[in-house]
Image (tube, rainbow, N blue to C red):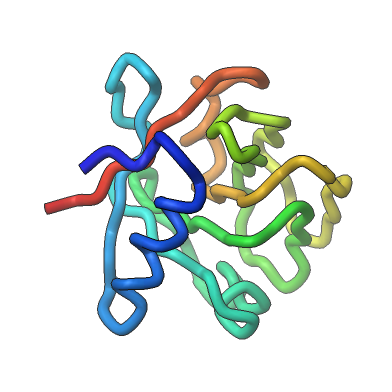
Length: 136
């Protein structure tokens, strides 16, 4: 199922799966897979922890943080790529190879963030539209 029509549908769909691990994929509009295994951080605690404590991140793994319009990399052990997404699934901004102990700008129109291993989101560009697809 492609969840690209409305952020409200995306939120509702993700909330239904709150009690089980649900993986999704990040794709370009041309259906090129960017990240294969994305987890959701949608509670205060999950958003606060994010990727802290992880010793590494595989190139196909990522994290969706929602709602979110700014991030930090305090206590991180590795660099990451970060994509800020608006309600139309367009990329508001992107940070490539963001080092630990950094803080992003605040993006008022960003609704959620996708974090991935450094270099894994390098094909994406500001203004691109993305798709998030449930893995079955």
